[in-house]
Each structure stands twice: as structure tokens, then as C-alpha cells.
Image 1 (cartoon, helix red, strand yellow):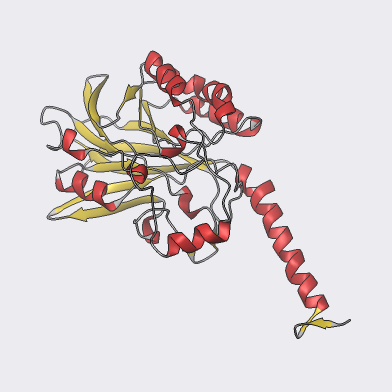
Image 2: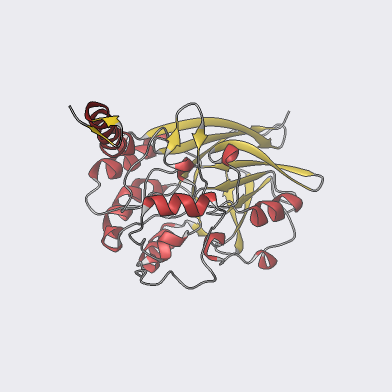
Length: 312
């Protein structure tokens, strides 16, 4: 068999077949291999009972994603004390009814939310290789509040209104409180730093002194937001956006984070330091993908049940 550019055609065919098989696995199996991750975070005052917090993020709902919808509905069976939604619920303007159906059972629980850029604007078709190169070069986010040229307006207002009607608290550059069986929880949230909608000056000042626990919530974990929350003394910051790297290398990890956070903290629980303060940081790998890149590799879709326990 002839060689092409010095490579035997059998080898070339083998590489192509392996690539096709990997793509089929990433799109056909792993991107729909939903799972729940469980972690414990010691942030409550001593003597208080543990709290179970469910974090959902980066759903990127596309019309017709029945398996994802059923899995999200099933999470209500965990009976969390409260839910935190860290944004990017949509990847298709026509997916709103299915998104709200998927989250319907969770809306019966107390909850808070922030939005991400894909709640406001639909994604654009892009060359994945160009995307990876740009992120590796440190090119992140949009230049100001305007969407990318040609971006589609997503009907985020309907999502907001449904969440608000259900009693979920909108944390868009603001503070809010939840009272849970005698515990007072305070939340401070930011709009999405990825499109420069964050306004920390509106919420600066640190945790609520009379609350049992103050939590910080943001969609994209840009360092400016993490630094501000940590310097102000928040014990736990919750974020999403990164998709856990989405396309990872086994035994190595993520190549990009789609923000200025380092790849070592692309998902899961870690810590963040600013000045003399240290905060826990939890970044959800999310349970969806951009509609134009519906693949995951070595990074399955997830939601996280965080059990908040008393400090040692």
C-alpha cells in the first residue's frame, strides 16, 4: 500500500479511524454520561446542622435533549436544602420550554441564580482549533457588554421571570438572603465577568455580619472577581463557565479554562488566596456544551451536591 508524505496508508487510516472513534465517543457517549459529584465543605458555624446545596451550571439546553432534561428532573430526588444555578442555561433560543421543564422539580426548593453570557446571547459557529489557540494565548471574554457580531438574543427574560416567580433569588450584581430552618444565609452575586457585566462596587463590603453564612456566586471565575470576593472575606465562592476544560487529556487534564483561571482549578473544589484571606472555590464542570461543539472528552457532564458542614 502506498505511503502518503512518508506515512504508510495503513497508519494514516488507523489514525483517522482512531480520531473518528474518539469523536463518536466524545459526542455520542461522554457528552450524555451525566453524573453527580459529591463534596463536603467546612464553612458553617460550629454547632449548626449540615446543609445540602445542589449546584447546577452550564446546562446549555438545546431543543430535543430529552436525556439531559430527564436527568435534571431526577436531581430533585436528592431533596437539597437549596439550589444554586451558576448560569449559561441556554444554547438554543428554542430551548426555553425544555429548560424550564427540566428545572421545574428543582424550582420547588429554595434557590438563587446568576446568568452567564449564553443566557443573554446565543453562541456562534466557530472553528474549534481557533478557539483553543485563542484561549491558550490568553484571549478571553468580550470587549464590553455588547454581544459578538451576529450573536442571537436569547429569551433570558422568560427564564428570569420563571425563576423569580418560583421564589429563586436573582443575584445579578446584588445581595439577597435565604432563611432555612433557623439558619440565615446571605448571598452576594455578580453578573457575568466574561462579558464584563460584573459590578463589584455595587456589592462590595464583605459578608453580612449577622448571617450564619455568606456565599459568593458568579458565573465565570475570572481572577478579578475571585480576588474581590476573597479579599472581602467570603468563605466559599461558587462558579461555573469552564466546562471543566471540556476536551481534556487523560492523566494530564484541561488545556484551557475559557477565562484567566489556571487549569489546575478548572473544576471541583480548591482554594483561592487574596491578601491575607483564603476562600474555598468550587467550579462546576457543568452538564452541557455549546450547541456547535457538542462533545466532551475525559470530562463528563455533572452537577454537584455540596454538603456544607461546621468548621473544625
